[in-house]
Image (cartoon, rainbow, N blue to C red; front, side):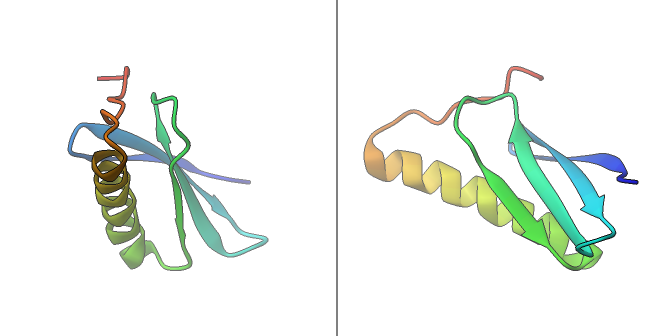
Amino acid sequence: MMKENTLMYKGYIAHVSFSPDDEVFHGKISGITDLVTFESDSAKLLKPAFIEAVDDYIDTCTELGKVPDKTYLQ
């Protein structure tokens, strides 16, 4: 059984699930067309992994001259 939770940072929302079989938290930014995911094997490191994924997404878009998508879930 997986539990659903959400995280928010800089206007981005991520849905997070825990897989007891893998003992890993998996997250995905919701409401954007680009695919941005993150994971952690520790609950304490999950939010920092999400923050890093958002910041990396924004930085990558800037480097590519692309406007980062904003979530439509706001």
